[in-house]
Amino acid sequence: MDPLHKLLKKDEDREAAVRALGDAHHALDDAVAAYRSAFKAATSIGWSKADLTKAGFPDPVRLPKTSGRTADAEA
Image 1: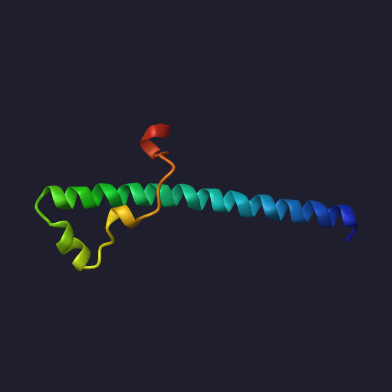
Image 2 (image 1 turned 135 degrees about the horizontal axis):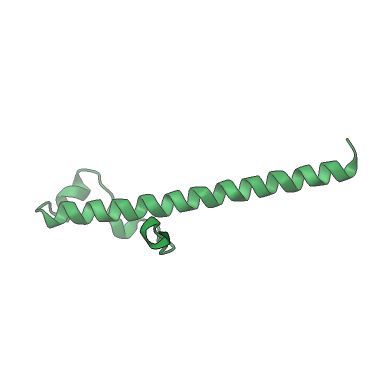
């Protein structure tokens, strides 16, 4: 394999990896936003935050901060 092809292949692999990371980041943002919404809905109909966290649901304030980008905001 010639050196130019090796370098280009490495660059292609790096681009693919960062694109996959970007896709995963968007999915994480969407999942965190959906979880926060579901947690809020559960507490708004009577579940206490203490009961939910005791049952094993993470407190939304302990989740990663999102970029503020949501699927609704992009539409």
